[in-house]
Length: 262
Image 1 (tube, rainbow, N blue to C red):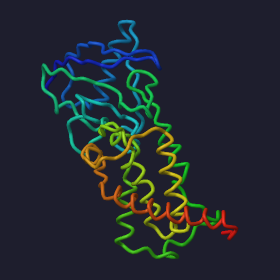
Image 2 (tube, rainbow, N blue to C red; image 1 turned 120 degrees about the vertical axis):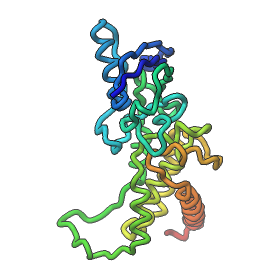
Image 3 (tube, rainbow, N blue to C red; image 1 turned 90 degrees about the vertical axis):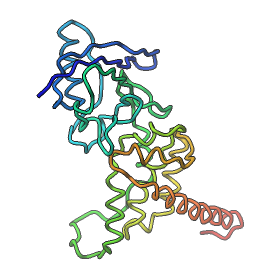
Image 4 (spheres, one colour; image 1 turned 90 degrees about the horizontal axis):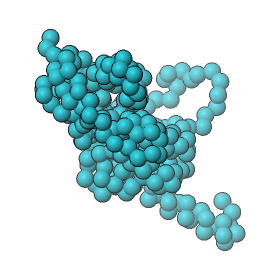
């Protein structure tokens, strides 16, 4: 085991007040520590000196929950590909390095404090359609509704999205298309999701626009930054589903205006 002597430039901000970078020396950091463990060490030292610790989100620390989102040296979750911040280890850095640590930057992700952001916009998008309406009661038998392997595998690929927001942080437009397409695509691919497919697609995309996320310009930074490597092919599918749902919605409204009912 070796020790690293590092210098951190950490973003400090209290709510909507102007923020700034704080210089923090970080000597004697074990190279086997995770990035969050390194932040824990830093905070223990700040507290021992009577200073305010750096606020950051964390929960599972196993690459599952997505709450550990940080911009490290300008890259969401840091330099390791397909890795969340909590799974990033300090051996990826070298002694003497200066590390810049910031929150994800997006209008739809307001800073709460320091490195903590409000990702409530993602919750509202899912509430707008990321579910299926089914009869409650005893669970169905596992084989009652057969699902082909290709469809099941595709749905599982989309379901890997952990909603961390790295795709938004990496996009120059702060677009949430990769997140929305994965969440909509997961349910739209399954037989259980077909009855509400159009309503789900329209609801989630319209809520995304309402939250203030930018437009997708197909540069695929989102896929490159995604710790779960969600494919941009889901964006293509969402665009197609949205076009179809929009036409159906427009035709339905036209019939209603003409007195034709539903």
